[in-house]
Image 1 (cartoon, rainbow, N blue to C red):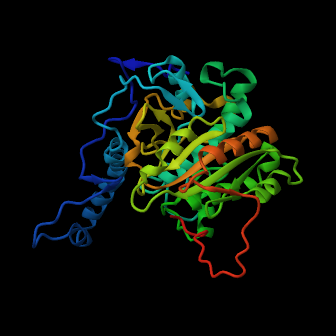
Image 2 (cartoon, helix red, strand yellow):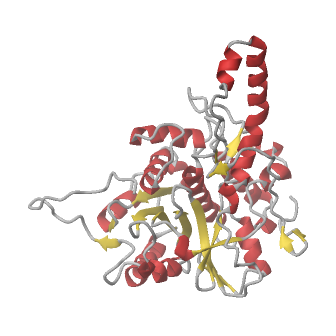
Image 3 (cartoon, rainbow, N blue to C red):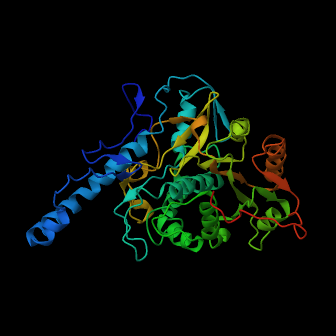
Length: 411
């Protein structure tokens, strides 16, 4: 595999294709120029001229890929870079439970660039009976959820110390297997195809954006049939209340699994992230159980991996469109195939710009780690008058109260 620390003029290579010229773009969608008054519509001209129909169709086919590239590479990918910030900043970094001196620390870069990065893809098989062969413009939360889960699998199967530099032998086999689970195929376990189809159960049409609650529940459902093989379970927290009796039941099912991925969908404010939650969010990235945050942008999800300095979060962005990688024999994947699942650059965003809707992910391998997670969370995440979420032994008894629940809401 090529060196992901490769640089160009001192800055990490973006590896993004230059977008072609095209119509103005807004959040991955084209915004057509207004047609002059009295100008005939192209559809009217085409309808009266068969050759025009063929010409229009040819233009559509040749232009779709360019338009999608432009969409993913335009405002969608670039909008989150803080223009006043550069990677020359020297603040300490908290990255998925690890501390580094700065973003320039080679160990920090190796760690971050070893995490799995899953982005928009094009030219994959249609999702079920739909016409969707790309997820540009609607799949960012689905991709962010894939990143959270896939990196939990890296932690579970390969351990927190694993990096690409150690990717040999059995570890290589596990690594490729994990990636294959997320390829864009109707047969891959956690493909965007299967995620979109399960979303229909939650009133999400194929091609519709997911919120934090939906992606959490969909991943849980998809994982149920895979739990015995992977030997860990997924527990989704509802209503912001982690109930210990339910967590225990999740971890003691008859498959003997002990490891657990805890997903906590929350809304931490009305229209923007309430600053009162900043300290807890930053502490989250110090926790050994941390596997990141999915969401955090208005209808435009990212996968957050850490904190840089006092006010910035590191993240991986799904808003880059790439050619799909076909599912094939593990030995047949090329280094070029696999490189597309690792981000060569480090991106940051001010914490103040986050949307309040997001999913926190916690991974605990065994009973000891669950106990450590609960102790840390109770003290630093779930205390005071504005906790990120609550931890209770059992569900409160609401028999005598008229309670409206937002358990089914997607924030």
